[in-house]
Length: 391
Image 1 (cartoon, rainbow, N blue to C red):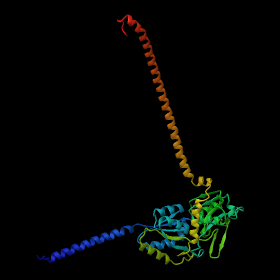
Image 2 (image 1 turned 45 degrees about the vertical axis):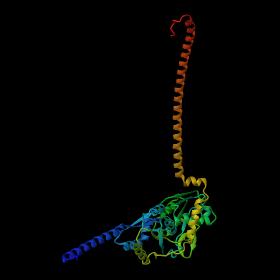
Image 3 (image 1 turned 120 degrees about the horizontal axis):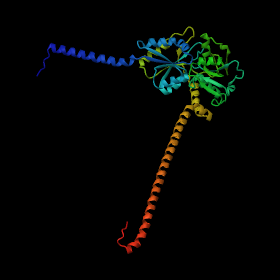
């Protein structure tokens, strides 16, 4: 049998195929477009302060925003601890942070560092960041690393690379034990500019900050007298123009998380590399290729974290764990006391009940004995008087 199709049938089939094609094409477009509709999130570690950081990376933010259009860009400022926490939970897509903090972030989140920021004060990407130890110039007793013994130190975070880890490594290089050197270490979880203000106000004896913080505050026309700041263990380098107290390490880095698609990341990277050199600061993004000293410092930091822990340090560092443990032990002790008292009370009640039972048993036995005596007296009488009743 031959199936004959007329023009009307063919036209209807073509219309049907066209409609189905349009339907599945629209579904495909919607399904692929949905994940890209959300905002791209950029995390910036707030070591300086929001004002300085926003100005310093304003061109970067503008370039990223243009590269991802029409998607939105959200910029969030972080302290060091929250930055590492949110990175592990994949709460942002892009980040700008110090080289050391970026390395710690990559270990927990799987991110990748791409570019390094430099400017006319730090022109070498491999040697563009360092730690700075500051105190008030009136402190004539604090001039070198050994003078830090027993001093009260303020830091932004113990996770800060230049503002803590680099300085701890420098102290260790000088043959001192950084775990036993200071009288105390206070973390503020605030921008390092706050530490500078506290030193000027003599609220703390010593502070650890990142390089170029002082210079940025001066360029921002800081109202305080920065000439009253003294840099301890100051070093000098012909290719680094910020005051510093430690060896030099790679500069701040731009990193990506595995949460964005490759075309978007490519567009962002190209956009940042094509940014012109900033006229005021000479800043631009480039590539660092020497991480040996930074990685060695981080390895030593991990080893040092596990060594030379005194009882006092343990009590201070893990104080909340000890408090929680003491609270649990107290609850256990109180519960034991309560159970002991309850058992004692119940035992006393049982002993009293047993005494009552024993007293009752003695009375019953005594009555039985009296009855038995009467019975014995009646036996001879029955021999002579059989009619005598037994009771």
